[in-house]
Amino acid sequence: MPLLNRRSAIAPDSPAAILRRAIEREAPGARTFETGPETQIGAGIGTGQAKRGRLLESCSNPQCRTGWLQLWRNRSTPLFEGGWTCSPACTAERLREAAVRERKGQSEARAPHRHRIPLGLLMLEQGWITSDQLRSALASQKEHGGRLGSWLVRQHGIGEEMVTRALALQWSCPALRTGSQNGLANPDQLAALVPRLFVDAFGALPVRLAGGKVLYLGFEDHLDPALALAVERMTGLRVECGVVADSEFAPAQERMLRAKYPTVELVEAVSEEALVRALGKAVERSKPVWAKLVRAHDFLWLRMLRKADAGPVPETGDVEDVIATIGG
Ligand SMILES: [Zn+2]
Image 1 (cartoon, rainbow, N blue to C red):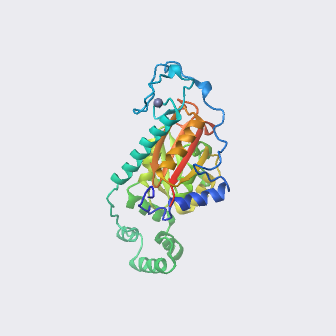
Image 2: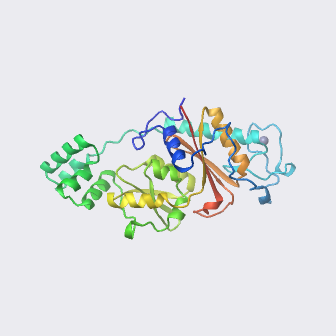
Image 3: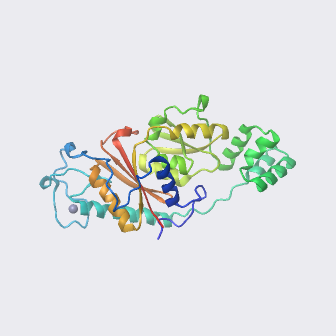
C-alpha cells in the first residue's frame, strides 16, 4: 500500500516517480533500498558527544525489556524525538511508532477542499481585465495549457504585478519579493531549512528568514499549506506562505536549487517494514543528538542533527536528511 493515496494537486506524479527522477538527476546510482549498499554519510559521528546528566536516562522505547540505563551502555546517542534508545531494535521501534503516527495523521488531516474564487473572475471583478480579455485568455489556456495569468500577461499586456496581486487576493496571502536581481538573501542558509527535493518537486521556494523566527515560503500559483506545516513542525519556525511573481520565481528557484544542501539519503522502501528498517539504519549510523520524523505529502522526512542547540538554522554540515517513501 502506498504511503499516501492522495495525489497532490501540486505534484501530480507519484512520490516514487519524483524520488527516482531526483536521484537520477542528482546522484545516479545513489538510490538506497533497505537491502542496498550502505551509503557513506554519517560515518564516525556521535559517540564522542556524550551528554552529561543523561546517564540515568532509560530507554525511550516503551516496549524495551532490557531496562538499560544510559549509564550501563556505551552509547549516549541516538536521540530521537527527545528520547535515548538503548539498541538498534529500540530505535527501530520508536521510528515505527513515529511512522505510524505520521501516516495516521495523513488520513485524518484531509482538509476539506476550500473553494477559491477563480483567478480570472477575481481580476474581472476588480476591473483589472475585461471580459473579452478573460474569454480569449481562457480559450488559449484551454487550447495550449499553461496558466491563465501567463496568458493574460502575454496576450493582453496585463501587468504581471496585477496577476501576482490577484493570486495574493485569491489565496489571502502576501506577495513575496525575492529581492533585487531576483536573488535570495542567503540561499545556503535557507537550504538548511527546506530539502532540495521539496524545493524542486513542490515548487516551495524559501524566500527569507525574518528575525530567526519566521520563514517565508514562496509559491508560484498554488500555496502548499501541507508542506508549510511539515517545515514548521520540523524546524520549529513559523512558516508564512506567499505568492511570488512569475518572472521572479523561476530564476530564484534555479538559484535556490544550486545552493548547498545538507546530505540527503533518498529511500524508496518496498513496505512499511522496509521503511522502518531503512530509517532505523540511518539513525543508528548517524547517532544524531536530535532527530525527528515528519510527513510532507507522500514523503516521510527524517532529519538528524549532529549538534544540539544549533539555533533556528543549523549548519548545513550538521544536518542529515532521509526522505523516504513506500514505492509501488
Ligand atoms: Zn531499549
